[in-house]
Length: 215
Image (cartoon, rainbow, N blue to C red; front, side, top):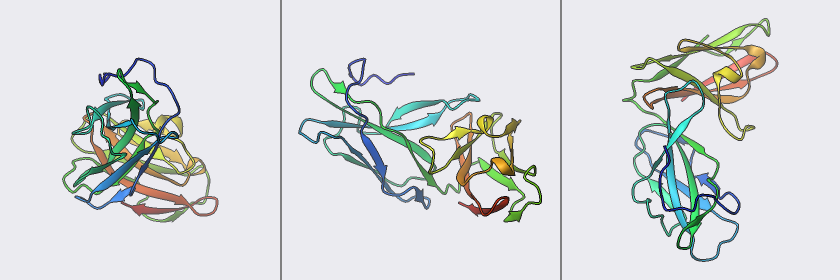
């Protein structure tokens, strides 16, 4: 579904630059979102969104506008107070009447510890491991109150996240990846009900030696 914010149908201008004050939060901490445009002249308003996973095998999200930003904010920053679960944010800018908007920014994830989440990710093997063959595999399994899951990966070298189906094999609620297809990245589960699991940061040390940091 599309949120009607009064924008013209076709966006104009470059994408705004979107940043977050921290990508990793303890449960209940706050995060500041920032949105900037190349032309900093007056008149811009800033619109803030959170992406909610859709129940599909593919990377599909619906946008939910953050509270108090339906008409845009004059400030180019927005504070999310007391975040208790992982979220994916983005922004858009616009000005004029009717509003001419820029393209949406690229999204940023903010991972948060959520002690109340029913979604969880487990990794097997569950500790740092040196593999004897690059055909060995790592299993990432999703658990919780959902019938449909997807495992997502995001690395600093990527412009966006990607699903297990593009770099592994998803069977039921488990993603299997060969060690030679593993890259330094953050992995997590998303449920068809819109929940995010805990995340794990997997780094490749040498050809086939993996190191895990559970978040």
